[in-house]
View 1 (cartoon, rainbow, N blue to C red):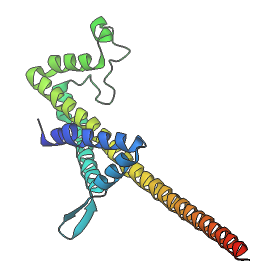
View 2: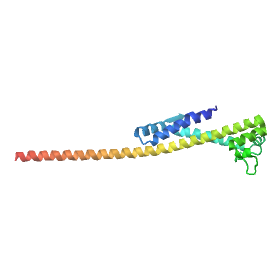
View 3: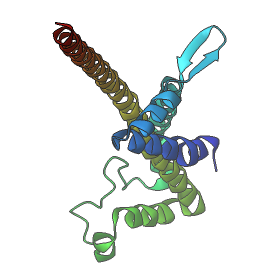
View 4: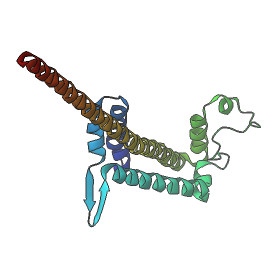
Length: 200
């Protein structure tokens, strides 16, 4: 297993999905925990980045790498030679003109594998495996990039919401304290009035 596949499948996606889910639950403790984790600062030399920004940059790098590799695969002449010239990598479904009932009934992946086996034998199967592996990694990196991008925005929105909620609670507590002081002041005035009446 490649390092990028391992990072995407077992670290970035589960961690990002867990943090995103916990930030969307609306529980203040989980929101603050998620916000604290995502806003952890990581310093690389003189550059300070938040954890979510660093992982977002790494996920974007993985996605860009897979995009470049797939573009090279789709545009190479070796792909057409080893994987069969009848298979268009951008359209894996069999042509409508094809009269072969097996190819018509097979799924897109089975039709590609059959064309690869007929065209290039073992080399064709390796070519298809290489292409499918990079397509899988492309989808994994796109999903990881999307999850971390959502997490980046959601944590910023939730942090803003929590700040507003905290300021409203502070205003409410200040108003309640002012009302309590006013009530005590009125009680003290009533007691003083009663004492003055008794003296008279």
